[in-house]
Image 1 (tube, rainbow, N blue to C red):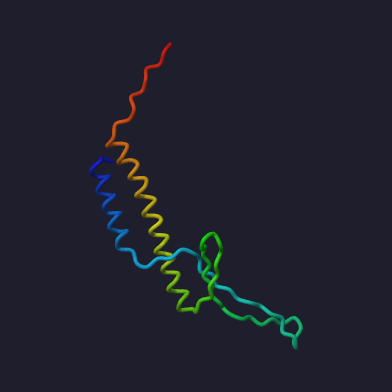
Image 2 (tube, rainbow, N blue to C red; image 1 turned 30 degrees about the vertical axis):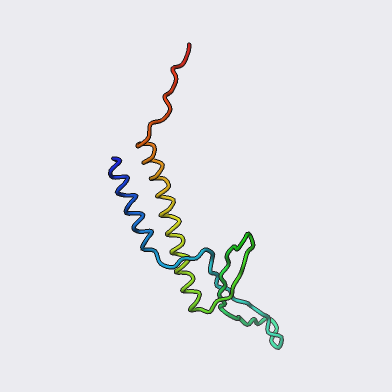
Length: 113
């Protein structure tokens, strides 16, 4: 790929980055709880689903309970964050390739025999 094409692709990625919506790190998990029914042996009652958002804050894992509507909203924000991470990774790779093409490296010495 030509240098001009690499730079154009980089600018397109930067524009995609600018168009991202609200984002947040973490994971949304759907949980259910099964309990034995005391009055009917062998029968179980299922509670839930419950939704939890888990993320890291200052090196500690934090878990927050969410409503079903919140779970959808947070999942969209998590998806946006993952898109952002993918775009940035691609931009890093392009940046390295652009820099290698634009700059002159150290001249290699000839080998002695």
